[in-house]
Image 1: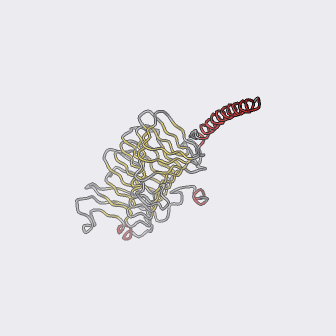
Image 2: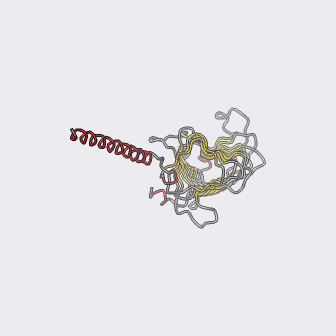
Image 3: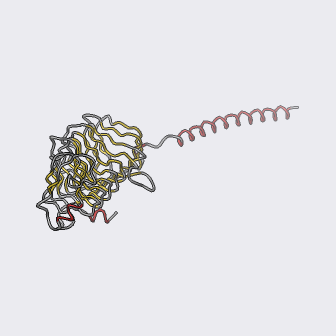
Length: 312
């Protein structure tokens, strides 16, 4: 009679032990699951995706990360974005970087030379011109922004500069619909390769004097489309474009001391659209005065660090 009671107590003790074990396992498993599902700290990720993102304070990005912009990235007034040398930024379909504050891309102007490039490009596997909208300087009126030592490609308007005057130096702008648009700007555009775009440089507005000097502007459909005759356009290589320059206002334009790909005045005139080309124009425009012109390629014009591109 005692044995069954003893057995019953063992069974009850076993059930109690199993209950405690189950509770313990449940707690442990629950804790383990919670730890493994914690999100990864974004500061430790090598890729940063910014979708419709507005800076709230000054930011300096890092070349150890790849940044992808989707939608609009906005730099508001009194805020600075610094994109240092070696950084890659990819832009999604129709993405736009709007600058109302200060944008500093690449090597500071005070440094002697460029040793690493910034890449501003499309995120598409098979990229094409107009994949992303570009960079809009939106009436910032600042003189602190600069872009130096960058490759900018596959945009609708790579640099759309309105009523501000950044320096664009030692860059390669290629395979865009428009590489640089200057509207009411005194920007300095110097020592750049502006290649394989529909339009290389477009100038608009009056009472400003953008300086477009020492650039290679080549292999574009139109090298320079000019609606601002105050523009300073000199010491550039303007060769191998379908049309090197098109004037689109009724005032005359002086663009002396450029190389047009040859030293034959007739051949130079053939790649310029102005009032003398009545079969090509539909409005009253002025005359382009291109003499004196340089008779051989300007050796120190254009992007001065081709080995950086060759090493990519």
